[in-house]
Image 1 (cartoon, one colour):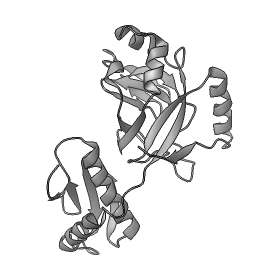
Image 2 (cartoon, one colour; image 1 turned 90 degrees about the horizontal axis):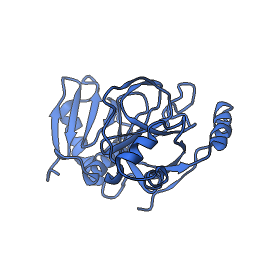
Image 3 (cartoon, helix red, strand yellow; image 1 turned 135 degrees about the horizontal axis):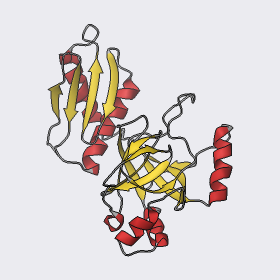
Image 4 (cartoon, helix red, strand yellow; image 1 turned 90 degrees about the vertical axis):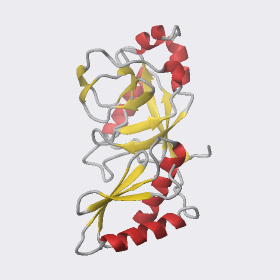
Length: 242
């Protein structure tokens, strides 16, 4: 991490605040602390704030907020974040593993000389930090997967992966929020919608929170799926105490 955050121009209507040049939880916490502080202040002239692994992109309207005033505001807000830290939550994501839900589970197990049950136990055994959102609407870049189940991507990506599919690629695990092409090894599927344009809050996940995968049966999958389609399912969340 840098001793002092770097504030860099990004065109004539945005700045980037960098906290370091490596991915780390400490660096990401600083990014999200500043993000949270600026969101609370609701500053006139700031049009968008986008957190990433190690930096924050702040878009602004120059006619309403000068870059000097914005820089001063960032410095002041950054100093206050030690008091007003982002308080993360855990979002439980129910997942049916293997079979048609996760056609690559057997491969992942064989690749590591494990049983599918062992892979599932490892995958559901951790809480995964959401470092940032990107790639497609609501896609969460997660950290914290065990290297014991790290598995190479498919040599030939699939042209269509169903929304809700849970996969592994290298040292990362993730959930496809919308139907799209992709090359991750699919080990399961969730009936929960990570992205729904008709919902008041279209994107379910938020950077700085955590995901906990919870195993469910195929029958439970279909039951939850029906509840989701009726807008009757409530995702379980609780405070992160790690």
